Every structure is written in C-alpha cells, then in structure tokens.
Amino acid sequence: MISYGRQDITAADKEAVIEVLNSDFLTQGPAIPAFEKAVAEQVKVGHGVAFCNATAALHGAYNALGIGPKSLVWTSPLTFVATANAARMLGADVDFIDTDPRTYNLSIEALEKKLEQAGKKGRLPDLVVPVHLTGQSCDMEAIKRLGEKFGFRIVEDASHAIGGGYKDHPVGSCRHSDITIFSFHPVKIITTGEGGMAMTNDGELAFSMQLFRSHGITRDIERMEGEPDGGWYYEMLSLGFNYRMTDIQAALGASQLTRLDGYVKKRHEIAAYYDKKLADQPIILPHRESWQYSGFHLYVIGWPDGTGGRNRKQAFTDLREAGIGVNVHYMPVHLQPYYAKLGFAAGDFPSAEDYYAKAITLPLYPNLSDEELGKVVSTVKRLAAC
Ligand SMILES: *Cc1c(COP(=O)(O)O)cnc(C)c1O
Image (cartoon, rainbow, N blue to C red; front, top):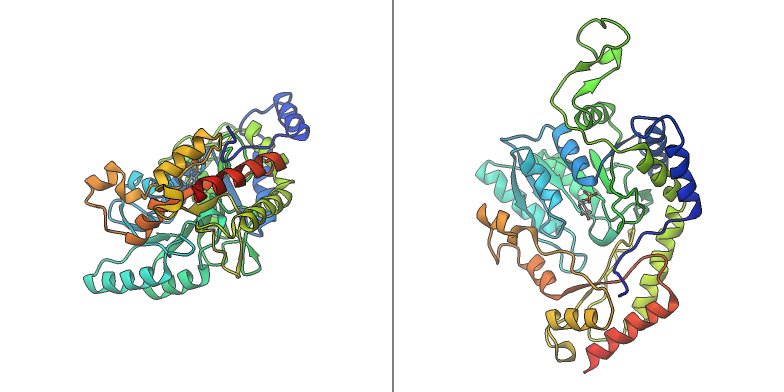
C-alpha cells in the first residue's frame, strides 16, 4: 500500500538523536531552546515554544490569550478535531465558520457575515482560529482586518503549512496573528515523532505558554513573586501541565528542519505532476491562490458523485483495493457525535459538507517514487473512466 503521508529519516537525523542519547539531558536540556530558535529564525518570528504535540500547543496558545469558560472560539469545520477541542478543554464555547468552495479554508465572506450577525446578537468571538488546510494559507490580512474591527484575537493553526508563505512572509511569522501553531506528527512536513510548536512575536504570550507546558513553574528570578530561598528555589505561578517536548525529539526536529525548503519544493513538484497528469479528468483538482505558497501537506481531489460510475465512497474503496493509501481530510468537526450533542447538525455548514462528500486525499510525501506516482495517476484515471 502506498501511504498518503510518510516521514523521511536520514542518517544525519539518526546521528542527531544518538548525540542526545549520549548526552547529559534527555529532556529539559539545550536541544529544546536550540530547536525553538531554529524554527523561529526559519519563519522569521520572535519566539518559539515547543510542546509535546500541536494539540498541547493549541491548548497553551488559547490559554495564553485568556480563553476560558465564558469565551467563544470560532474555527473552520474542515480541520482536525484538536483545533476545536483545545477550546473545549478550557471550557470555552465553540462555533464554526463555513468554508470557501475553492480553497476549503474558512470563507472570509462567511466570517464577515457571521460577525455582523453576532455583533447584533451581542456575542462576538474572543478568538478566531484560521486553519491553513492542506498547507494553503488563509487570507490573513482580511482576517486581521476583521479582528481589529470586531475585537477578536487570532491563532493560526498551521499544522499543515510550515515551509509555506503568505504574501512574501513565511507562515509562522505572525504578522497577522497573535500565535501560529505547527505540528510535527510524522505525516506532517517535518517530524519530531510527536511534537508541536507555538510561534509568537509577543514575549508575554511566549512566557505564558512556557509556564503552561511545565506545571506553571518558573526558575526565572525576575518573574518570581517572592525572594528565592536558595539555589533550589522555583515558583509555581499558575496551573500548568507537563506538555514538554524531549531533547530527543527536538534534536530530530532541528535536523529535519535543515531540509524543510527542499521538502516543500518536492511536495510542489509532486503536486504539479498530479495537476498535469490529471488535468483532463472529470475530477476537481486543488485550487491555489496566487498570493500564497502552500506547504502542500495534502493533495486533495474532489470526486463528483457518479464519476466513473462511482460515488466518493466507492472510489475511495477501489483506490485502497488497488494499493493506493488514500485518506479523507476531514470529516467536518461539527458532525462528530461530541459536537452534534452540543447542538450542531448536518446542514449547518453546507460548503464544508459538500467538500467532505467529494474529498479524497492522494498520497503526497517527498520520497514517493516515480513508479508509485505513476501508479496513483493510472489508478485514478482508470477509476474515473469506467
Ligand atoms: C495534526 C493536526 C493537529 C494536531 O497535531 P498533533 O501534533 O497531532 O497534536 C491539529 N490541527 C491540525 C489542522 C492538524 O492537522
């Protein structure tokens, strides 16, 4: 089976990990700040705060922005459940914004309309979380403008988009947001096994997230409320979790990061190959906005009902049976049983639901061979034709 995503681990990655294993620190050592600094430099932002995964980073980011039981967080229904769940973990209410039929990212028109209605009803969101689905950036200038007008904060869920750009700036530079989140799960663009990072230009937000990932504890004398008793002294300033990344993971991430640009370039080459080979097929190919450069985590095709005499489900099953490890990203979050119990229902976000009815993710990762790519294309063509 050709999987839809797969990590690339080199000899240099293994050496970097072994070096940490032979060192004094497996966790809370120097590899973590080194990795944070390297990612921050890569995406041109002030601070990076590493977490054990991107879900924990989202939790820490929302918490740093003051999200709590009375808050309201809006995001896209086309995301992994964690984007919405992190708000629920803090006791906040969640609502969704319908998606753009071409980019599948949250629709700016739908957002603006919903904000105007919410303003009239007197309950505006405290936080909006745009998700750069498949790696294509949302229109952040437009979202930032609305944020200023309606008074909400912004966290970018860029789990798919490290290495991508928006209007000449790297995704993660936080020019139009408070915090940006990356994921380093093995199917994502670079990996630490499990891992995530929150990027920000705001030192206070960074400090708050550092506390949150490590029990609310600081050893920084400047930050303490009392006088240190001695060299052992630390203070717990707030409630926190153990959401730390290990040095083993950070070393792997730093080694992977040196190949980020090459990985994204290769992903674009594969996407261009699919574009070209599938251009004449009766399926929907990914649209790209000209003002962004995608991280290309995913290549999603739309399978209109009846194409090749198949609906999406049959096409998916037949692709899998032919050894193509296709996937579907994502089932709209509002239709998950947990969210349905909160009152969401089918029909609430028609554009997202329409996308979901057609979506199939084709394999996309840097080490796909020409032979594998050829097999993906010929199988899609065969199924679309008969
Ligand atoms: C992968 C992913 C997450 C969660 O990342 P983890 O590192 O697995 O916790 C969150 N949001 C989106 C959009 C993702 O793709």
